[in-house]
Image 1 (spheres, helix red, strand yellow):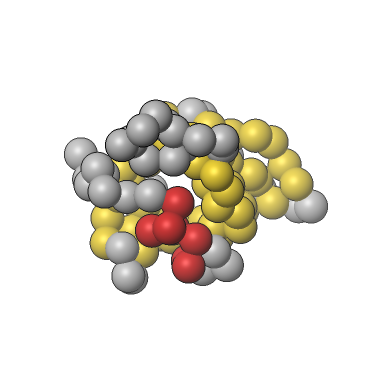
Image 2: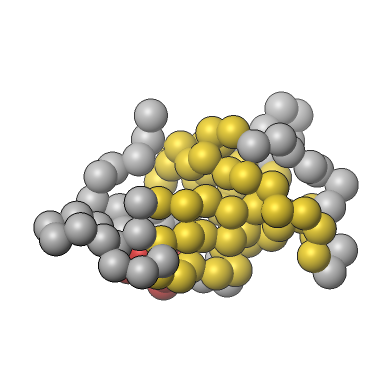
Length: 98
């Protein structure tokens, strides 16, 4: 699994608006990171919980599950994505980190 424990909201926030490449059967699919936000406060000494929201092509819908996303600056990451439904002609996905 590709998810270093030191990843945090601060790791992803600078990459909002950029594409993460989803390894998919056939051809890779681009998912744009559109939102990276804190979800309250974590335990003392633990990372702050956060969520990431991605937009992808509406014609490529996925069930929830762990997917490998690749980013030029962050490398490959295994992230559990949950579909939230369509938004403005694109499909929206969310990942929660606690």
